[in-house]
Amino acid sequence: MAFPKPTAMSFSYPKQWSAEESGPWGALVDGNWIGTAETLGAQFAQRVATDEMYAAGSSSQGLAVNKRNRVIFQDLPFREVSLSWILSPRNRGQAASFIGAINALKIISAPILQGDQTLWHVEDCTFELTIKSSSLTLFQSSALVIKDIKINYTPHGFWSQHVDGFPTQIQLDIDLMETELLHRAKFGAGYW
Image 1 (cartoon, rainbow, N blue to C red):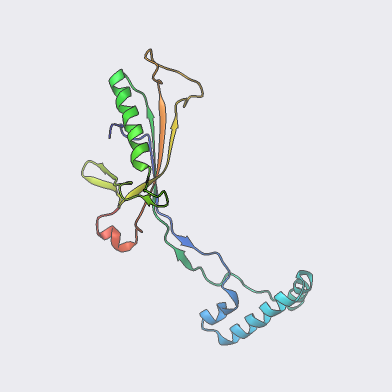
Image 2: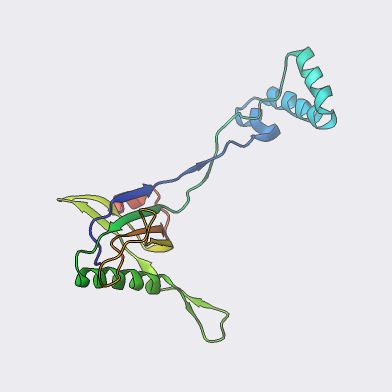
């Protein structure tokens, strides 16, 4: 597009692992059948007793239920990308190019409301992003959608304009999200 290189590029590769309790079956997962019975008994006591009673009982026995036996993989969220620019047009042509590209992003990223206004058409709202450094590919996306576009016409905290009225600087931030999950096989298929 008409933009120079971003001033900031941020890529997210999230994975969700649980910190949730493993429940009464934690010992069973470890293959400890006796431990399962002890855990069930302790959890039953914990649910029946008040917090004070359970704490007193645990203190006297020197035992407490371990709620964190295992960490469990929960989810692979969609990858996100954040790009940021400080655009400083040097002339009227460059300013027109920047504003045209910003307006094109607004239009292309907006879905189309279908005839009876109950359905969205979103097929042509996707982008692909490739970032290379010389011959090295730093990032290659699958289809991306724009989650947010932020435009700040006063990035320094005050209004400043050229003679023709166009702002001297514009901060543009774009947040994108992939529409396909990046599991291990995808890295081998050319996505980075």
